Length: 316
Length: 293
Image (cartoon, rainbow over the protein chains, first blue to last red):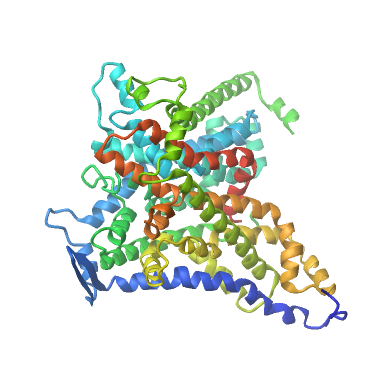
């Protein structure tokens, strides 16, 4: 297979091979443009058209300018402003899960990386806490739905202790709480691993110096670990927020797409999904919500960028 | 360094060390229970019949695991779980192969060749890494509809070729492990550029490819949003969609909960088994892919 080239041109070595780079990146780009970039613009384009099914009649597509944007920010007849409602739900459920997620992850990361404590069995604990992250979110949601349903084991326990059956999915705070708890459970292990990497990147001599000076563990934690971890904490929080904005699988399965009770667990992506896949096929509104999500994500990503730009002289 | 360090601590420090150690283990045991308890309940409940579950809550397994399994395995009414598992496997396997191969290829192209657009291309991929797939879903589904690709797996598999996050991981791995001299040497030996990549460089990237294959497989196996938009034919459904049907079914009537738990069990067990064998590499892969420096 290699008999033709015995002599290799020595000069312009890098230049003569440079064009090969385009061949190597071509499949990625062709597919990216076809499956993501064109769909992205076409989604945005859809936002400017009236295009939905009303009963049996297809309305549009008619160009309506920014009318869909106005609709998005106009309260419905029942006084509910959908976009605020869904953004609020998404954010509330995200915060309810993310706060314990970050706290647990910080504690665990400090415990695992502590030179003083030398915790045994780390591979086991790490395996266990990371496991929920690889589990199908839909299955997780289904599991919690059955566990907390009116006839599930949780209600059986309540009844066994003489309590009344509690409909967890008919109360907005318990429904949101369960969704947030699943998100917390799925992500705290992942966050722990990320924060550990951050802590291990901190110059160990700082901890030693603190120990020599007789600093308490709590002082080391609040005066050294936290401040030096701040960039990575911010990175973790914002990427978690970007993920949180996409919250879909868990609330979709738990409420079977309805956002029950009374639209209090309906997230932005659930409403996007309903507009694309629901009976109304309201592509105009789906387009507007996509733009809305895109802008928020874009702003957040920009902040992440600012925090992760390579710094001079940083440790590997 | 540990030996000398201990000298700095006086007695009270040693006592506080013991206290923090004990507290740490208590906390670790707590999070272990937290992480495993729901799975424990899942397994226990998958071994109980619907009637047994109605009698109350128990912490020990019963004998109906096989029964539940047989019921689920033969239920072709609204969904056929074995088919769902096979479908999910086909989609996930194809996606993970395409994702890792082409991400490695793209990263190799950026790392090895000095073409003019190189920097811009890398920046572009990093820039689009954060864009959620949901944001372009509407346009994507329109294209899928126009090309008559609904209820096929192409719309789920092909986009895997362009996976910015996997590219990013591969790029970092190649930068740190692949000596460019090998590429040069292969050229001197007359190897064609693609051959160099496929038979010389790809084997060197094996560890990174293995890790990313697992991540891509799991992500695809668990994916719900896009498949739910593309698939609605009974025999094409993947597991997450079947789960959503199981769920909406529970709205109208009280289903057989033994069956429901078994379906959940079957949807997660393949991934859990793989994970238990490879968790070390998976956890190691988490940090490499995300922390930039």
